[in-house]
Image 1: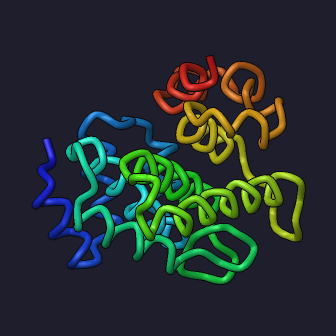
Image 2: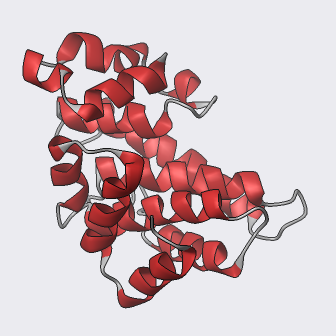
Length: 194
């Protein structure tokens, strides 16, 4: 089990790919498809920080400086179109992890916290960016594993179902091949969509 201190050290060292692998291996998702997409160089920074923020929020009962620092690093990765990533294009799977991390962080922030508005704005822009990516938005269309990552990460967020088209909710059941249906990622996406 990863401790808060271990995660904070990986964040400080910038070992994002390793952070994704360690967090996924510690009870998140054992899927090779998820690991491959989230450790891709275009996704690893946003995915690592997003997953780190999710885990840090689970370990915290109130706002912590570690969470605050990770959220600020994450928001610096947000592109004008809303997606997160180290390149101008951003990353769909990295953005899904980032939005979920910001959502979890926002749940710990008090109404009067000066960061709350910025975090909420980044979450909304991230959801709009993901919707734009699905609708074509000038980028390549996400593959079925990227859609499953979106559903797995964002399915539990109440506003997600209002923003993202309904076909995403069935991604694990209808769009995946038999081997993908047996993959941990697609089981988790179906559970998150239920």
